Image (tube, rainbow, N blue to C red; front, top):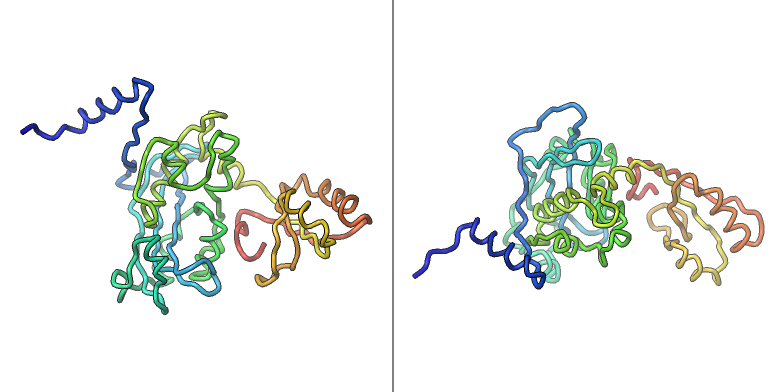
Length: 300
C-alpha cells in the first residue's frame, strides 16, 4: 500500500499536468493570514462582508449569517493579508425557507438559539476604513437595517467596481471568478465567500495587468451622480434600458422613475441627451450626488 502523496508531490503533479497544455488545475483557496495588524505607514484596514439571509428583500427578510473578514491593504491596492474573521449565525423570527437552506446549507437547527447584537457588529467594524461586498447593492441594505454603523463607512463592490468583462471574464459570479483565478472554495457560506473575494482582488487582471483591488479602490473613490428621468415617455423605456437605466418603483423613497448612475463629469452631457432625444424639450431632472458613503444604499 503506497503512502498518500505529500503536498509538495501533489503540487509537482499539478504543475506537470498544467505543463502539458491540456489541463488546468484548480488549487484550494488558502487565505494569507496575519497574526496582527501591521501598523505600517500607507496601510489601511478593509473588511470584506457577506451576509446570508432569508430572502432578497431588505425590508422584509432577515440576516441568518454574518461573515466579515478584515484585511490589511496598501493604498496602491496590495493586500498584505487577512485577520481573524467575524463569523456568526443568527436565528430569524420566521422559518428559513427550504430554498435558502438548499442554497446556503444553513438549517433551522444550526441557527436555533443563535443571536448577534448590533453592538457586537458595531464594535467589530469600527476600525474599518472600507467595507467591500460582492454585490454591495444587496448586502449594504441589509447591513444598514441591522445597524446604522454601516452608514458611516465608505463601501465598494467587488462585482461592479472592476470591469470583469473588459478583463476577459465571461461572468461576475464569485465562484466563476475564483475558477478563473485558479482556485476553488466552498461557496455560499459567508466567511468562505469573503475569503474568496479578497483572494480575487489580490490578483493582477489579465488584460490591463493592474491589481484588481487597485482598480476597485480607484472606482470606489469616484464621485458619481444618479439622474432620475422622471416622467420619461413610456415609449422610450426600451431605449433607456439599453442605455443602462434601471427602473425604480419608488418603494425605497426615491423617485418612481428610470435612473442611471454616472461619473460626475458625464452628467451635463447625459442631461442634454435626455432633453434632446427623450423629452424633446429642455427639462430639469432630479440629480442625486453619490459619495462612497452613500453608494448602494437606499439613499441613492
